[in-house]
Image (cartoon, rainbow, N blue to C red; front, side, top):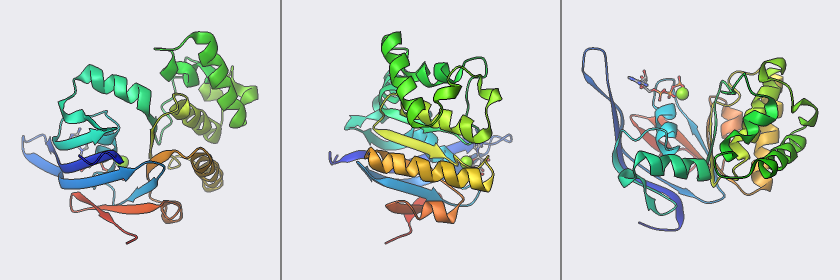
Length: 229
Ligand SMILES: Nc1ncnc2c1ncn2[C@@H]1O[C@H](COP(=O)(O)OP(=O)(O)OP(=O)(O)O)[C@@H](O)[C@H]1O
Ligand SMILES: [Mg+2]
């Protein structure tokens, strides 16, 4: 294990079983390393395995074979509880469909990842500051469904950053927005990531967005292939 990496994966294999009980290989002998303060994009055809891979490195899926170290911790030997704790402390996830909780207000959605281990007043202040930076200070008491798609995605981005994560994962985060809104959100998001020196892995179908990464990978033939080398 080379401890300069934030994340190091070797020989990752992931299979699903289909309805006929046949094994389908999605990821086979994949190797991947991620440096701190790096932006990585992943492109590739629909169904190639991008989300499957992101769910594994986001500690949402533990059903795989291979070696996986995150912040020098051997994830493949962690319990579910340890994985959940590590994810809560260190990882922020942004999804295509925002995944906001409709019953909660904007600020409650953003506060959610922190409520487990921090006091509520402090959590409220941190969340409010983020929402101000994201131009949403006048919306903090709205329910998500009263917001536009772009505003909802900014809330989801704020929520992914509220725990000051070591790693941010974004899965086709602008895929559900119109082109202008998508461009604005993506530009804003990338600027924020660069300013704060964050580490980001993002999946996108948009070639222009993918080119803004430091390293570009294509998911093909069950593996990641570096594009810009
Ligand atoms: N729970 C599951 N059970 C069985 N097969 C699955 C499951 N989840 C995903 N798959 C299959 O695994 C393959 C990879 O899916 P994945 O969602 O990772 O693709 P993707 O590259 O993210 O595609 P897209 O660009 O459309 O989001 C697909 O063929 C999909 O049908
Ligand atoms: Mg996907």
